[in-house]
Image (spheres, helix red, strand yellow):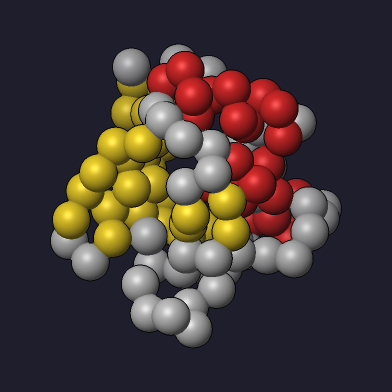
Length: 97
């Protein structure tokens, strides 16, 4: 990640992108189930809601008994309407748990 790349806390990004209804649910999901972050071809698992996400990162996490794989396109400025939230990521795949 370059020094000038925009970043945001993982729990905040998942909430802004509307994967979770509240920020506390987002934080709890990261803490309890963890998230895999792939950056520059290297994958690491984190259970820290304060981990940073930036454009280009690929996130793998579970939600509603499904595995979500998304690429972060933008960090966003706020939790906006669903149409705005959908512009924050590109869905790469999902599979049954």
